[in-house]
Structures are given as structure tokens and as C-alpha cells.
Image (cartoon, rainbow, N blue to C red; front, side, top):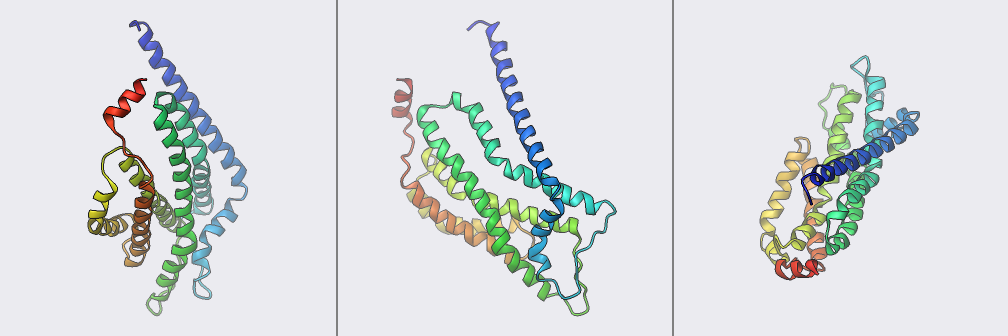
Amino acid sequence: MTREDQPQTLISHLLELRSRLLKTIVVIVVIFLGLFYFSREIYAFVAQPLIQVLPEGASMIATDVTAPFMVPFKLTLYLSILISIPFILHQAWAFIAPGLYQHEKRLAMPLLVSSVLLFYLGAAFAYFVVFPLIFGFFTKIAPEGVAIATDIGRYLDFVMTLFIAFGAAFELPIAIVLLVASGVTTVDNLKQKRPYIVVGCFVVGMLLTPPDILSQTLLAVPMWMLFEIGLIAARWVKPRERTAQSASDTE
């Protein structure tokens, strides 16, 4: 390859990256436009876990003038990005796949599919299990004489933090499989460090969730269970052997 060819190769990669980014943006915009008409209904659905446990006569409020429009707008945009995750990962996969070895391609596709499913599972767990528990708990412990009136913008920030936290935490089995497959660690080594990892789950729960023991525990315990699932899945993964693998890749 001459020096004249090298800039052209870099430019071609940048052009392909730009093309895939534009496709991703277009997909997100199209999904957003399709959902925006239902933005109020979408927000009502997301707010339902809190609304159904509010005391009689209580309601959510909007303290900002633009909040009744901007909050559902932001939620619809967030939802459009979440729905687009499979397409986004597919574009990322198509961009990096030519540079991967055959054994890496065989491992990457199942991991991409399972990572998407686990992220959605984590978000669903937060909505259907965690939200009813923590909102029911918070509304019941309110001091007497205190009117509960949650701002819709603050509520959106709170639930999006939990959605992302639980979605990311449910990726733990994927992380374990990747670590074992790459030869960074082994299943036996992870088993020996189980007590430290359990403590780490509670530390992560403390950092990723709001400062209350209930939501921290509701994140830490599933992470512990997912760690055990990751250990089971990692037993079926053959650790990477650098010398033998390099020889086979060369062939």
C-alpha cells in the first residue's frame, strides 16, 4: 500500500461511518415522529406506577411553564432511542465486522442479540417490579400533613436513571462471558472472588440508584443473581488461547 492509498482508506472508513450515523439518526427521527402524537399517552403509561399509589386527591404537577410539552417530548425522544438500539447495534456491527476474525464474528452476534434482550429485560424489571415497590414505599412513609405532588420533570429524570441503571446492570452476564472468552479471567477465579463481587453489587447499586436502601437492594440482588447466571453461561465458552488462535487466524 502506497502513501497515496492510506489517506483514501481512512477517508473511505470515515465516509462509511458518516453514512451509518446518518442512517441511525434517520431511524430515530422516523420512530420519534411516529410516536410523538402519542407522547401524552406514553408519559401517562410511564407515570402509572406512581399515579396508582398516590393518596386520594393527590396528583403530579408541572412547576415549569414549558414542562407539559417538553417533558413528554423528551420522554418520546428517549423511547425512540431505546427502540432504535437493535438498529444502532446492527450498524455498529456492520461497521466493525470486516475487521474481526471468524471466531470473533461467531461470538459477537449472539452477544449482541442477548445484550439487547437483557437491556430491555432490565428496563421491564424496573417498571413492573421496582417502580411499584419503591413508589408505594415512598408514598406510605410521607409525614402526616405533607401533600405528595411530584413534578413531572423530576419524575422523568428519576425513572430514566433507574431504567438505564437496571438496563446496564442486566448486562452483567455478557460482561462475564466476554471476560472469560478473552482470557482475562476464569470461572474458577470468579467463584473465588464471589464475596467481593457481591459487595461490589451493593456498591454499584448505591452509585447507580437514588439514595435509598430499597432501590439499592432491588438493583444489587438481581445483579448478584445475574452474576451467577453469567458464571453458568461462561462454562460453555472456550477461553481464548493466544498462540493457537493466532495461528488459526493466520491460516
